[in-house]
Length: 77
Image (tube, rainbow, N blue to C red; front, side):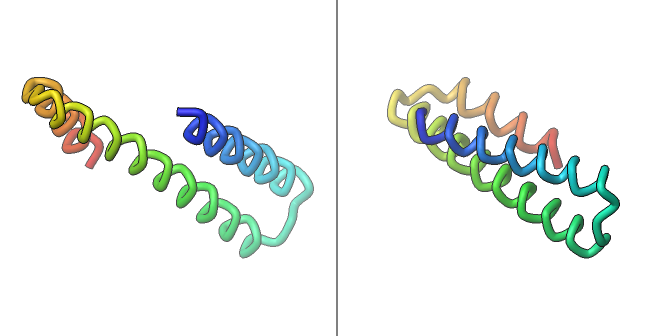
């Protein structure tokens, strides 16, 4: 999970940079672009964690954990 932690730290850096951009009053289009980049990075990290967890649960034939994960995903939408 070290790669996930690294990804999350990078997203944190993007968020900090985004806050500084807003504080400085930078151009709206640049702010929106950075928002989209941070969101995409977080979405990609979420997908990676989700994929790994589902594979682990399926590998153990742990249907109750798979069901919990699916409920969490559906709840978010």
